[in-house]
Every structure is written in C-alpha cells, then in structure tokens.
Amino acid sequence: MIPIFGKSAELQLENDVSSRYLPIVISAMIFLAAMAIGGLFSLSGAISDWSETLTGNLTAEIAYDPAADLDQKTKDAVTLLAETPGVKSARAIETDETLQLLEPFLGKSQIIQELPIPRLIEIIVEDGSAIDLEALSEKLATAVPGVRLDTHRPWLDKMVLLGRSVQFLAAAVMVLVGIVTVIIVIFAVRTGLIMHAEVIQVLHLIGARDKYIAGQFQDYFSRLSLLGALPGLMVAIIVMLVFNYLVGSLEASMLPPMELGFKGLMTLALLPVLVALLTRYTVRHVVLKSLSGMM
Amino acid sequence: MVRFENVGMRYGMGPEVLRDISFHLRPGSFHFLTGPTGAGKSSLLKLLALSHRPSRGLVTLFNREVSTLERDDLPAFRRKIGVVYQEFRLLDHLSALDNVGLPLKIAGAKDEQIEDHVAELLDWVGLGNQVDAKPQTLSGGEKQRVAIARAVINRPQLLIADEPTGSMDAEMGLRLMHLFQELNKIGTTVVVATHDLALIQRFGNPVMYLKDGRLSSRAADSIPESFSEPEA
Image (cartoon, rainbow over all chains, first blue to last red; front, top):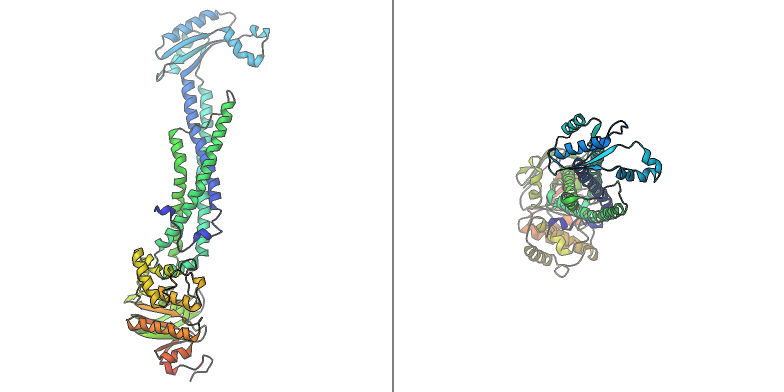
C-alpha cells in the first residue's frame, strides 16, 4: 500500500475534531493557488501573443499636410517598405477604409469626410524576421518626410509591465497560500500531539521510535491535504472554464482567456501532489521536533 | 541489571520528589516497592521505565548509564522493559490481540509471528477466548491481564508493575501475582509497586520502602502494618 494512504492505526487521528475541517481550508487554499497559477500562465501566454502580434504588424502613418501630395508620399513609402528585407507586405489603407474605422467612434456623418485624416500603411513582417525597426523608422522618415513608423512599442511595453506586475502578484499569492497552508497544518499537528499525548507516551514506552509516531501523523495529514486539494482544484478548473466561456462570448474582449498551455496544465495537475508533499514534510518536521523534547 | 546511585528527581523547578535514592537490583530478582501515597513510587517507576530522566545522580540500566543514552538508543532499551500500569493504558479501539501484539508490530515483526505469539500469550494469561474483545468489553482483571501480556510479549529483562492489583478483588490480585512469579522464575527481574501490605507479607519478597522521597530496603516482615502507623 502507498504510505500516503495509510491509516493512523494506533493514534486514531481520523477521530479528531480539530483536523476534520482541514480539507476544507486546504481546498480553499488550492482554489486560490490554482487561480493564481491560471493567471500566471495565461498572462505569460498573453504577453507572448501581444508581443508576437504587435511585432508582426506595424503601421506607418503619413501625417496630414494639405500642401503635400499624400498619394505620392504613400506610394513612395509603400515601395520603400516592400523592398525592405524582412517585410512580407506593405499595403496602403485607402481613405474610405480609414473612415470606416472611425465610424464606430464618430458615426456616419458627412463631416468625417472633411477631417484631416492621416494616411496609413499596414505592414506585415515575415515570421522570424530580425528586422531592425529603429533603423527602418529612420530610413523611412529620411526617404519620405512626414512618415512615422508606429511599432506599438510604448503601448506594448506598458502592457507587458502590467502583465508582469500581475504575474508577480499571482506568484506572491501562491507563496502566501503555501505559507498559510504550512501554518494551518502546524497548528493542527500540534493540537493532535497534545490530544494524543497519552497514547504517544504509551507507544514510546513500548519501544516505538519517533519516526513510527511521525509516520502516522504524516500519512494522515497528507491524506487530508490530498482529499482537500482535489475538490479545490476541480472547482478552480470549473471557474476557469466558465471564465473562458464568458470571455469567448464577449466579442473583442480586452481580457485574455485562461489558456494555461502544457506547462500550466502540468503544474495544476501536480498541485495536489505538491501540497500533499509539503504537508507531509511539514508534519514530519513538526512531530519529530516536538517528540525530541520528550524523554 | 539496575543500579541507582544518589539519584534525585524533581518535576520542572518543583521540590525534589526523590532524594538520594541508591539501590541495586540483581538480574532475576523480585522486589516490592511500597510506601505511603505521595512518597514517590510513581516517580521511581518513571525512572525505571525510562519515561523520565533523573535530576541528579546515576541511573544504570542494562550496564548503560541512562544519561549517556542517545534518543535513538531509547526504543531498544525500552523494549527490554515491560511496564504494567494501574490504569492499564490499553488502546480502546484495538482488540486484545492487537493491544498485546503492538510492541511486536512496532519492533517490525511479521503479522503471522505476531498472531501466533499473541495467541499463545493470551492463553497463558487465561484470555485465549477473548482475542477479539475490545478493552471496554473486558473486566478490570481481564484488562490487567491483557496489559501484562503486552508488557511481557517482548520477553523483557525488567518488568515493572504499578499497583497491578489495585483495581481488582483479592483473588484476582493473587492470580496476577502468580503470573509475575512465573515470569520471575524464567529470569525476568520484577518490581511491583503496591499499597497492599498484606500482599507483600504474603509473598515475602524484598521490599523497597519509600517515604518522603527517601528509600530504605526492608524484609517483608519488617514493614509496618499500615502506612499511618508510626515507625519504630
């Protein structure tokens, strides 16, 4: 039999009221940890996606100038961009198309036609291309005055910073959950040691080693942790699925769905085992230390 | 076997409950330990059972001075000592068989060995038909016999009994004492703590008499008729 499922034959820890509710607390802790892991891995994926998408798609903007020939400038810029190694395609966005983009914000009004709207060029960069955007921006500005290459970098940098901050918070939540779990387990074990002091003394006097007694505590508490962790994890997975459904049903949502990837799913799957192991070694340490104070 | 030299014992920062205790128990001897309530009998038994350490002096068990024992050495030493408690201290959720077999289980014996050995021992104490009984279904005398069987299953060299006849009638008490005598005959050193002066006089073994934490050795016929009687 796997030791983790062993019963405390002599100490009968299963009958203790003090530890009966431990699985519920562990369950809540695992739920929080699983959500934190979900956030951590989803944000990691989302940051990569943003980075890839925005690096692959650039926009060149030709500022409105009533005195300049904007069509010629657009043509020159498209030609230069199309010849640049690493650029897959460069397409001038027609004025009508640009106006359509503004319609959701300004409405279908004749006055929009009269706005000083800049010309835009959509640039798609080849996959895996090591294009130097700074150099391209300078080259473009020199060749076609008034053209500005928008690499979306400032926006992306802010989003990445936000994402990393939330990731840091998620990691902090996980550490906090781990610490709280350890503290709860320590209190439960100490209560158990006090409640069973008499039986422990009898076991000692008939020749039991500290490890024998610690074994009963660690098997029991690991089992409790595992039993608490599984429902906590299941609830967390259900919440993530509901969240993804809601995000999917909202078109063009700013929120990324919770996509954990292989590493995230493995971490989630290992979470109950990790909590059981953390409990096991915490209990072992506490019991052996407490027993070493006895004769 | 057992040697105490100027042993003192106190609980925490309290007063000494045992003072300058010195004695020597030879292998295979049988001693009674008696004295008025509060004289320190239980404390002396705790030292013998390796349940407590002395505050001062030397306690030598099985040729090892107790203060030199490492924590890892204690289980092996305790397996050489059998202890019978007045209040039995059996585990209520275990059957008589499991209670008696517990020291063997803890020592790592196989299940078949434990069952054979325990069944034999329960037969010896007259409980061969009660192997599956839980302590709460047994009488005081039966519980005490289960406790004795548990204490001797490891074939201890030293058997300590604290008021073993305290919770039973005189006839059952005598039967238990005969069990102790049988164990003593096969070489086990026996120390029985009791208030029952009539029992001590009946068996006539050497007596360790404790009063106010001090020990004196006496012959069975020289102990007072009662603890309230002023000593000569």
